[in-house]
Amino acid sequence: MASERTFTLLELNHMVRETIERQMDGKYWVEAELSDLHDRNHCYMELVENDPFGPTPLAKARAVCWANRWTALRNKFERQTQQQLRPGIKVRIMVTPTFHEAYGFAYQVSDIDPDYTLGDIVRKRMEIIRQLKESGIFDLQRELVLPRFAQRIAVISSAQAAGYGDFCHQIDDNSYGLSFSHELFAAIMQGEQVEQSVIAALDRINARIDEFDVVVIIRGGGATTDMSGFDTLALAENVANFPLPIITGIGHDRDECILDMVSYMRVKTPTAAAAFLIDHLSEVYTALVSARERISRIAERHLAYEKMRLKQLADRIPTLFALTRERQTKRIDALAHRLDSAATQRLERERHRLQLVAQRAQAQDPIHILRRGYSITLHNGHALRSGDELADGDIIETRLEQGTLKSEIRK
Image (cartoon, rainbow, N blue to C red; front, top):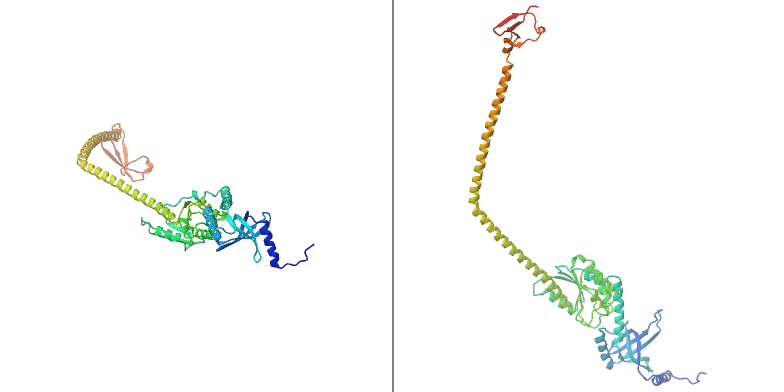
């Protein structure tokens, strides 16, 4: 049966406080996810344990770390994990249950285990890497070829970042005097908006893809511990599938983030990214200069050889001319001899042919017929073959071997 006594809220809260302090006076390690965090000298946290099968949390609680402990714990955590404490990450913290009559229940944080969070981060990274490899895109960037003349650079960075200024100074004032053009595609490079902001910058570059040879993602000048935004699946997929080589210079030394793993080239700092591009172009320039010198030397050798050959030909011309003239004279003499012989043979053939023709003509002379007692009758100078050709009064001529008779036709 409930007590008849009525307590004030302060009295009841005081009893709760005494009970907690008496029954739970030790320190406890607890695993939870940070759902909210406010760093205001003291650090105020919201802890949650989510239900893996539903949207409603299984447990929630407030926690606080006082300033005299918070700075040391925060520095230790960031140094070992290269991450900032932020909502969404899992932590293992040492707490003391406390209850205050005016502020209610809260866990007082006295220690934190960076290895636990680091392990959770590693597990998440390994899962993302597994998905990227299974989809076949993990190594796509390294299959690209950096253009020989990689001079048109798209830069993704915060406009205010010191690292961006360092990159521009390094690339513009390089000791080789090489010319580069670069354009900034501003993005948020720290905090929860990194993924969305960098992907949006990549989309803007992709819309003008023909204007650039290479993309540089650089970060510098801010906190070097918050790298979580570069360890997301969506950002890694966008970078891995991007059609231009992407160089990352995010400015951290400890471990590669997933963005580094899928990029074409990872360097440590923005200035190192600039140095890489300068060295790449200087190598091309050196190769061109070397090729030009080789071509010049080869051309000079060929010219010297041709000059020597021409001189040798010039020296031989008189001899060649004399030999040629002698050969031509001999050839002409031979042709003249052949022509004379051919002409003589042709004249003999024609003389013989004329003799044969004369003999045939002589054999056909009518005088031979007349000598055998025949006669030839002519009418108007033509041999008469038929009497029907004559008319009354025509004069005909009869030619005998010796003499000619003329007659008049009477019909």
